[in-house]
Length: 403
Image (tube, rainbow, N blue to C red; front, side, top):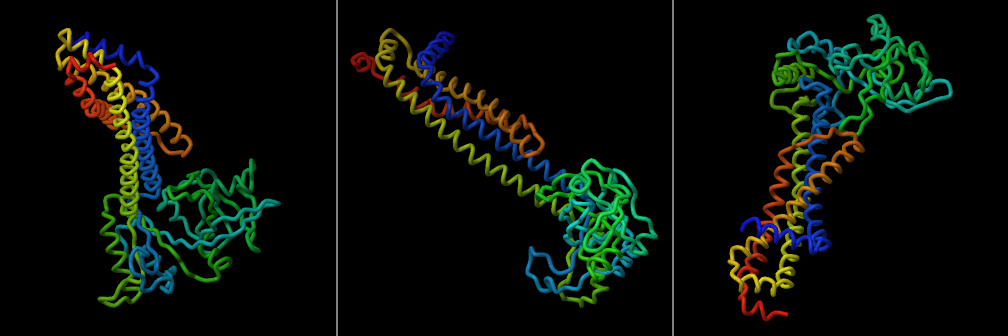
């Protein structure tokens, strides 16, 4: 009897194939939207985490002024760091693996007839340790170059491509302002960061050369501190704050005129934000599943009205109410399950295309697929029950009179 009821339900679906297709479309769109949005969200989260982890989970950065996340007292008037601060941090921070000074300016770099606006950064060899950024070719700065402030440059992949094309940049001379700088190294490509910045659009030169020839001062805008393996960044952060408060003569009870940020905190904030956005996108997409369920209920109610006489005949010849109920319920569930299956395929395909276009990893989550499929089945049961119950409760005499 069960097999016969299922057979009758499938025959009814085939008889109205086009209408069944339109009914299923709402479920297809809903499931596809949910899976695509959530999968893209997971991929975005994975990319953000991977990009930030390249900077090192044990990395801290120190800047003068106060963080823009809170009220600003010192702001841009805060005293910049200098090389004596760097020396003190290197001598007294026992948990630090590397302390890196950073000073940057935007400059137009020229080679032959080519020119390119990029970021010129003054630093030293600790940069490659704290940033965990190896060279693709060439060498790092010599100690003599760092002490004397020689105009030697290490460039990123974007600068190489824009200025040199297929030429090897090693040993070539580039110019910015009136400075001629020899290219001694090329950084490994890193691509865009999660913030949309091209990490390879950079030129490194010795800090002293940068201060003398470009900045015209001895200011250091940022200090990167990389903690040793096994040392808690919280302890290193506390040591940095204590030492800099002492050096910058910040009295007890006064707010710091600098701030220290732990990259782990940045990673947690960024990934938390993307997780929330993924949930919101999934919730918005799930609304279309609800709309699809209403479409199923609407079409099934129309089907009951059209097939009133057929239902009356079945009831008159001995069919039980539960059999009629089950038949219409099966029709609704089959439609929603078919829509769920097609929606899963389309959703994963859309997510794969989006991942390729946005250059984010495709993160397949079997759980969201299972949830979407089960949800589509629940939609069929819930929204199919009212029309099925209406059909089962028809009076056979009234149904037979229906035209």
